[in-house]
Every structure is written in structure tokens, then in C-alpha cells.
Length: 69
Image 1: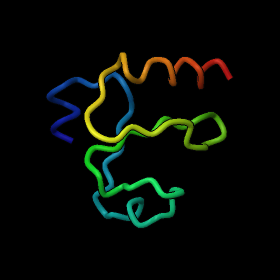
Image 2: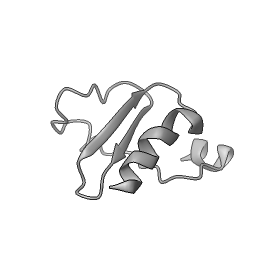
Image 3: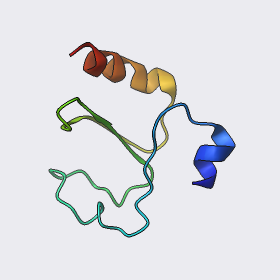
Image 4: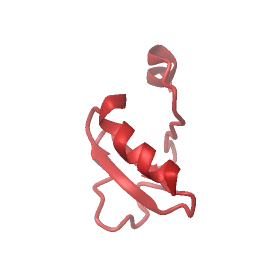
């Protein structure tokens, strides 16, 4: 989680050391891609998926939509 500390991320980040999440079925989301950012709604459903590097401005519209639900 060095990346999280170095860049002082302002959002939760999960690192799947065991690979347990990576082998789960996420409806075709290629979790082998690095990094993968998922926005999860209040019902723990995947609301948005971002592959590769993203900035807050990329995430903000989806975050605002999910928070408004």
C-alpha cells in the first residue's frame, strides 16, 4: 500500500494480497488489469469501473451520482 501512502489518496483503497477477489466473478471486469478502480453503491453493487490510472475529476461524476442515490 506504498502507493496509497505516497500519494495520500483521499478515498478507500483495497489491495488483494491473497488474490481472492481477483478470482471472483465480477461480470467480465478484467481484474488482472492494474490498476482497477471500482465505485460501489450503497447496496454493494459495482456502479462504475475504471481501468488504468484515473484522476479525481474522472471519478467525480460517478461518485456524485452514487452518493445522490
